Length: 174
Length: 127
Image (cartoon, rainbow over all chains, first blue to last red; front, side):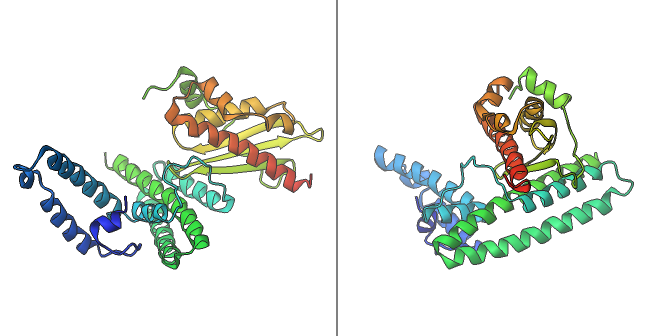
C-alpha cells in the first residue's frame, strides 16, 4: 500500500507534518465507525480495515526513518526486515567509541559533562545524516536510493545510542 | 523472553572480553553491526606463524544473545586454523546456545564477525 497516496501527499521525504496531521484527522473522521452504523456488513468491515490502514500509514509517515524506509520500499528497495550485518568498519569504530563514552558516564565524577558531550555528538551526526538522507532520496535514482538505504542503517545506530543515553540519564536520576 | 542457561552463563561470565594492541601485526579485527537493534560487535584474533589462531578477544554492545554468541565464538576459534575458523556457521552457534528464532540474527552477527576478522588478516598479510 502506498501511504503517500492514501494521505494524498507528495511521495517525498520532506513532508509538512502539520498538513499530515490535519489529513490524518480528516481521514479518521471519514472512516469513523459511527459513519457506517447503517451501512452493510461488508462496508462496515471495509471501513474498519481502512481506519487501521490510516493509523499504520500515519505512524510510518510521521517518523523520518519509517517514512524513508516506506519511500524506498515503494521504489523497490526493501530494508525493513533485513538481517544482513553492517560492515562499514570506520563507522562501527566510531559507534564503539560512543558506546564506550556512554559506558563511562555512570562511573564518572562529572556524569552530566559526559552526557552533554555524548548528546552533542549524537545530535550533530544525526542532523548531518538526516540531511544526507534527504538529498539522496530527493535525487530519486537507483544509486542514490542504495546510498539512502545505507544512511538509514547508520541512523538506526544513532537512534539506538540516543535511546541508550536516555536510559542512562534515567538511571542517574533514580 | 527466557534466555537459555548457556546464554546466561556466557552473559554473566563472558570469556575473552577485551582487546589486543592495535599495532600488533599478528592481530586482525572484525567489526560488524546490526542496524535493526543497534548492536555493535568487535572480534579480534591473534594468529601465529603457522596460521593458527592462538588467542581471541571480543567486545560487544548488544543484548545477552549477541554477547553470548561472540563470547562462544572466541572460545571456539582458539587453536583452529583460519580456514577451520571460517567454517563456523551461525546455525552451530544458535544451536549451541539454544537461541530462539528472534535471536538468530545475533548468531549471524557473530559468524560475520569472525569472517570479517579472517578477511582482515588475509588483507594485511596479502594472502
